[in-house]
Length: 175
Ligand SMILES: O=P(O)(O)OC[C@H]1O[C@H](OP(=O)(O)OP(=O)(O)O)[C@H](O)[C@@H]1O
Ligand code: HPA
Ligand SMILES: [Mg+2]
Image (cartoon, rainbow, N blue to C red):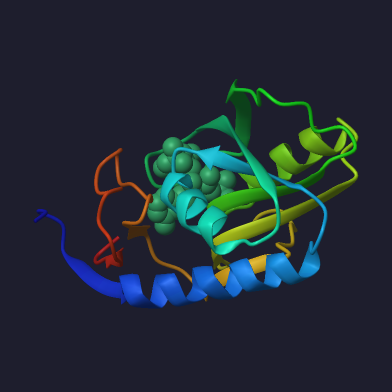
């Protein structure tokens, strides 16, 4: 399947359970208002697809793409917008949807940028909160899994653009 040495970390069944729990929490927190889910490309594409179907509140979806510069497995702290949202977010209830928070630079930059556009509320939902290499303090409102450290792939997460299609999430050994 791949030349990397992999160890199964979260199975597709465990992922589905956490996505359902997150969908229930979000549905309870927004019983009536229309949510704007903002998926952060590319890594969140599968998570957004599953999370959107687990939320019972009315919602619309948009995507943003952030480029960060650094080595292939580590964020540099320099981020810029590659593809902006197409929908206005002023006075909307916005939830940023990320696959993983690592150093925190991507989310911190995006959070501050979206906040300046005047949403009614702005929250963060991340599938994986990876804590050991955090460089800025950014708190997610909804978290699927907490992980200390380790480079992971699958379910949207890539290593040099590959392996996003693996249904389970795996730890890459020896990294
Ligand atoms: O907390 P940070 O250290 O900023 O890292 C987290 C970000 O890095 C990854 O994106 P990446 O830049 O690899 O783009 P991708 O989603 O297209 O893989 C991941 O999907 C997060 O967006
Ligand atoms: O562990 C990871 N895997 C894939 N992409 C990432 N971006 C930050 N951390 C990771
Ligand atoms: Mg990536």
